[in-house]
Image (tube, rainbow, N blue to C red):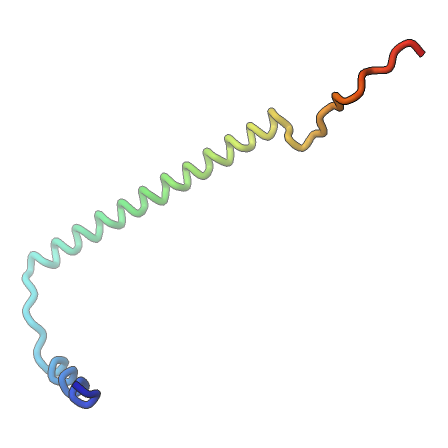
Length: 82
């Protein structure tokens, strides 16, 4: 099938009247779409809550452990008896 034949076939299909869609199909699509949106919203909120909990846990850990502080030197013994 060459390009001209494909274009004429597409034009014939587009010029036809659209087929009748069953009425219950619209209701099913709306119901499923609403369910998908609710699930996406719930997943997004759960992910945001998990991210916030991880940030709080990291902040608490960092404040208690203080990883930025230099640890005391343990390589030389204290000098006594001078």
